[in-house]
Image (tube, rainbow, N blue to C red):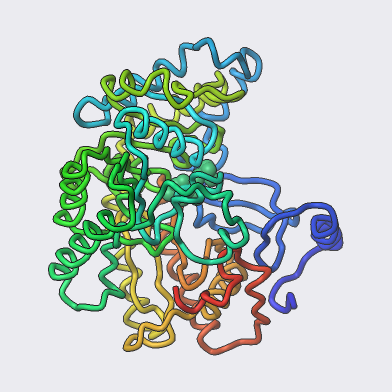
Length: 460
Ligand SMILES: Cc1ncc(COP(=O)(O)O)c(C=O)c1O
């Protein structure tokens, strides 16, 4: 199996024990990591790999950022956990500073531990504030794995199989995505109009017509890095208004700064009613949340269990780390850096699209890009096995990346330099060449990706 990898006996022993005692999805080879520094992680043998998923898209400043390490040490000595029914200075300061990045009257924060929980708070807020019944989400959208968030998720695969009535009924995955690359018409403007019209009709016919919210990722990442036009997202705002529904943007994959603006929705001139965040704003700790206007917060207060407070939400240590990270992101203009370095990355990646037929398309913004792996550019048939082969060979070249089905994500920590990006794309080039030559890699999709374990893997 590991013909291109050489692991120590200690490493192999850890892999075997992991397989025996720990439940979890694992990519092949099942490398065990023990350290991170900047944009790289190191396995237990000391081999270095570029981390093209920023952990789980959470480490905006990379691994072991010295200022965050200092904050963590200071807070470990001072104050780790408290009752969520009291506050702390770091959370207050975080909420204030975050409000300065948001448009309109978006300013009040309800903390959560995970992105899923943040989205469920948003749904509670929408139902509480509107008295509505249905939450409408986008086909190919992902909002988390807790059961109500799972009900809003429709990225295909096995994740909802067998859950039956555990996923809530008051929902409709009915927003038709602006997925131009695989749209039935070639003209994006035409698809904007058709998909918006279909969305409106589906809302009318698949909901109770008492719609609490339309909820979507402004750029839907896991579902295929779907970057809509301004017209489309503004059209979604108009539909929400027509139905008296709130508009919720899930920014878990996008904020802060990664796409070249602080929020992913910024370039669209659309102001949502509720924004949820996780991952990149969490700095790798359990610090996620839901931001809304004082008016919506007041209208929903005392209903649906709001404001929400769990055991760990708003804890001082995660609050302080998230605050420090937010200060650094703004101080160092990481959004500007992501825009500039992202343009460089786009140019370098375009060379791969030219060179390899299996790279059907590369979509994204700033420092978050996704390769759409296909059998050939004409049919655009998703090729999950080639995606897996590319991921495997990238690992052998010292690059770890998340590949689900035919979608390969390029999401380095936002501090990555152009020199590092150059090196990364060079390594990807080698990896793709090896995969295309069909070098012997036993592909085991069931071991290597949660969502690829289904018959629909090829449908992407
Ligand atoms: C867009 C989006 N929203 C929400 C979530 C759920 O976040 P968490 O895993 O922290 O619950 C994810 C997770 O991947 C996500 O991609």
